[in-house]
Image 1 (cartoon, rainbow, N blue to C red):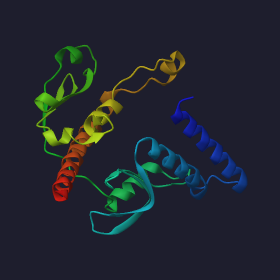
Image 2 (image 1 turned 60 degrees about the horizontal axis):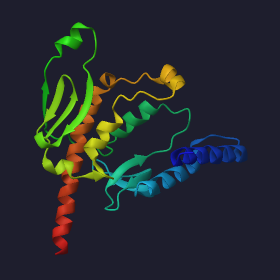
Image 3 (image 1 turned 120 degrees about the vertical axis):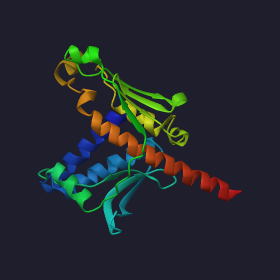
Image 4 (image 1 turned 90 degrees about the vertical axis):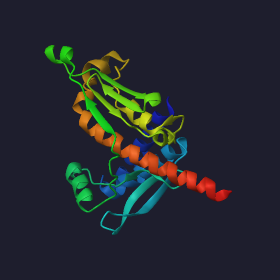
Length: 224
């Protein structure tokens, strides 16, 4: 069994054990099992899990999230907040942003849209491509849209063996499941439905990448 599946299996076992002991699936019960899952997953990807991580909001207020995954340089990879099963997650997320939780500005890359007449006349969405063209400092999203002017430094911020930007692109590619049952019942993802969100995300990840590499280079220079 794949290690990721083993982690999820262990999480479900822990959750059932805690549920049996407490008779509840409240936030406090579920969070303990999920915390263990995050810790195990972090170790697989050379990340550090920190509970009750402090962050400063855009309003300069101090807040604490239930947990955070950090790189070795203590740069945040992601935050975790436990919620009850009856919570409205969209409402909770909106509340966090209204309270000024960390928001990264978009990087001013240039967006170019050229209509794909063939696809449009056929009643189809533009063909998803999601390809990084480092040599030309571009990201080709689909047969209509390209982001240009991606700074060289943005490609240098790596997640494993690829840049953070390439990692994002890979997550949103349209991939046909090999299992026929899954393909028939659950293969509903289409990039076109998430395109604008991905554009916004890529622009923010570009900012994070550039600023992180600036910090890394300053630290390297300071060691000399």
